[in-house]
Length: 262
Image (cartoon, rainbow, N blue to C red; front, top):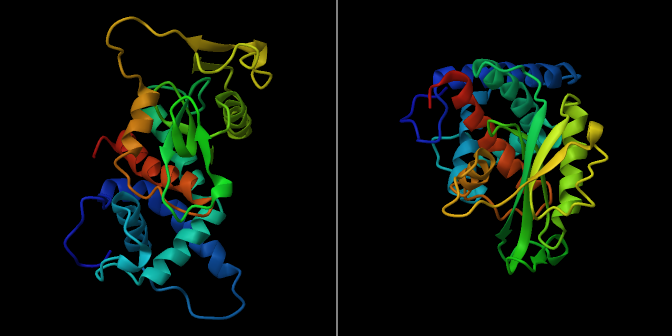
């Protein structure tokens, strides 16, 4: 890591130690595929911290501070990690570590689904936007599937007009690929009963959560979505951008759970 004053979004040594093996293995595999050429010299920790900085502040890539690597280099690494599923892989590995630290098995057996509609900026194509009639929001809809302690297991981002039922089925399909142990899922009353029969889950164990009177207690999965509001990079035009805007801070947050050093 370069000698500079750290930013609040930077990873601590303990948290970087959890992420570094995955990124180093990725770089080695990439270099092994090169027939010729010099090995890469850029520091992976600086690159990852730069991505966290952009994700947290929402600045354009060209506005990246000069004490980070060149913005073009950082974006090239970001695009490669996004397209090759490295961000999602980091979350998968870190989730297992965090669950073990909580005294649970690495593979979850229960999950919670929730959605959130958010506005988008003017550079997002109309084809990837929609209108959430219930919330009167024009933009995109985020869907997450978490375990019972709030760790993200699956993410999908669609036009806001997509029904919660359809989005929930996508999340279940995505989660079951990596977590076949999931046998139960909780949803709110926005998911209709005929869809909650959950063909994706054994024994049709998909339960809705009824609204209780009075001031509601914020559940962990609502906190998971609420925490993403602090991260301002939510205006990416490419459809693959918004899910990454959730996976990246999720990886950072999960290192906190796995090390107890935030």
